[in-house]
Length: 246
Ligand SMILES: O=C[C@H](O)COP(=O)(O)O
Image (cartoon, rainbow, N blue to C red; front, side, top):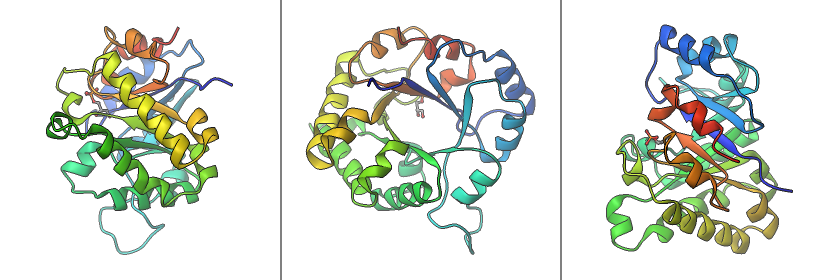
């Protein structure tokens, strides 16, 4: 069975009620691509109450335990309680601005899955790591931390998002060949490290300056199973990206 194409829109810390309503009112899904909007936690319920058909909602982060004295944090239980089914974890902005380690990201992924959320788990190398020839070493290390904390069966609720940090918000997209190379290597690594079944069925999104103009060529690569879109997910061109898979 083929892997269902899955496109996430990561709004990051953007949007207000007026803008959110405009985005949602203009979002019409006419493909069987799975669509997930990663929205600021404060607006999850507002988004859900104005959600077009066939669109799901994700939080952009959560903590690794159900509740307790963790001021400012939210838990997977809370995300589920307000109706969202997904959470984005390990985004490079969480890793690099908020100093989240591979282990913390993996603990969060494990707890979110145990709590019944589905997870978009982000990985990706920085420019200096790519230039030093360390791309695979970095993405395998980040993924290994997750492999060590979750069960093979849990992979059915995980989407991996490969997002080279140098391509995020820079307008500098990985070429389809560059992205395919890493996705293919990740799939091979998953086959050897977890199982052939997990490697075959796990969807790997590409993220980093995806636009309406480059989405189609990226989507045509055999190991690219969707996108995680930042800036363009706030614009009308998001519809073109959702429809990029032919
Ligand atoms: O999560 C999305 C990525 O950070 C990509 O952001 P971008 O599409 O604005 O480059």
